[in-house]
Image: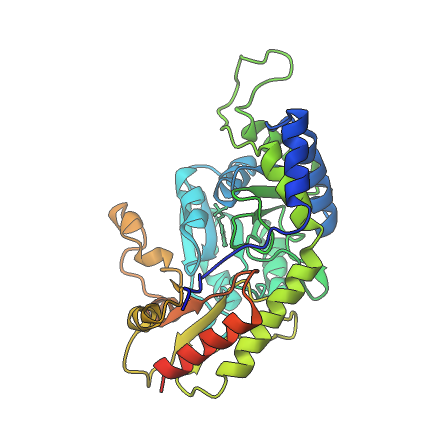
Length: 371
Ligand SMILES: *Cc1c(COP(=O)(O)O)cnc(C)c1O
């Protein structure tokens, strides 16, 4: 039996054609025409005025934090159950990450815990939509409004998703996306910042390009980074974006099939198909082992590996990261929901190229392992 990889992208649209165009014209750097095109088309798709393409989703968060002027001593509230990129961007700016636990069913930040964490030092709320369902945005927007806080929206897992009909990625003062190969659309490596604010867009562009100045190019008033996306990456992005609706439909199909095939296993918590504000787009199909299961996620993943089924563990909470504990952050805190799903959650093959046959085979193996 061939292995079933945890992710495989689908690149059989116009990707090759547009890449050849880059080679044939010689436009391979960030100066090439696909970059502008991808920025404009992706921003339009999310209903935003400006898109700034960058080299990945993690640096998009670094640039977002810097562009919003978040400084040493400031506090930023985010979920503990997320990828390190979110907290890393805050810590690198000198600000303090303050975390909240997640909801046991949606795995998204528990928005009812945010208000207690707001202090006079709080400058921003970093919301991160997790695994396919959006954060409940209305209460977050109300808090941001009441306390005068900026929102950074990490929509890296939410291409094509909506919250109450409004596109994810349209809520933040700055919103960020990733185009890593396991996201709904990919550029290999890549990311984007979106905003409606012209000054913020200009700041993001400047930070992306070493803060070169238009007049005196090599005289710098500020430190930036080289975060530029190449024309080759953007060419892939334009081709992928043409198929976003199809890709979202495919992911929903994968999610629905898994749910049909796995819902009879008593020990497994499956992803919620929907909430009252969104239908799941199943960025990944996560499983959480219920208390009655006598082994943890690591062991379940080892068993699936024996059948050559690829898996990945869930995120490890920010407050339990050795790197942050060594810095003296998150001393003595506990967030029980995130701690539990980190140990009992993992995801099964969920990539765009997964075939219906592979879905059945993965489900059969999962059934076998949980018998
Ligand atoms: C993938 C991801 C990122 C990081 O994106 P990269 O392009 O891999 O750097 C950031 N945030 C979330 C929520 C992600 O899923």
